[in-house]
Image 1: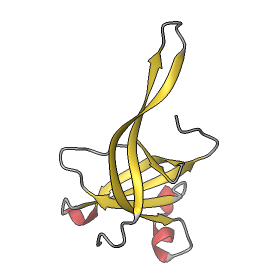
Image 2: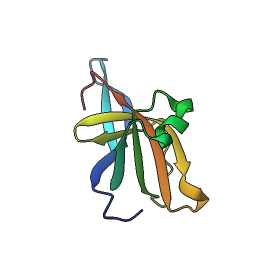
Image 3: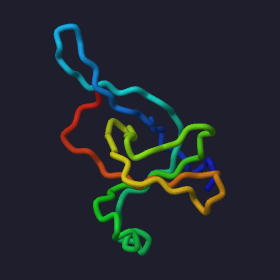
Length: 112
């Protein structure tokens, strides 16, 4: 994977609940990291057919590992004003260089 293919700007965020002085709970996104990634939408290729265990996955992101920053399924990826819930995170070829993240697009949600 080269930087030439990593054209998509993404933000990795964690959503947390905050209670205001009146007692109302609001959800807020905290941006944990911003990076470039390779983005692939779900299609009918053999690779996506082999990912049948994650049938709800609609998008794949591949990006460089960020040192001392574990990406988990509790996080969300923001890309092109869309939200993607992380379903799985895999270290590509166990080399510690790239992460492959399977996600599903969150429909009907606002960013903020």
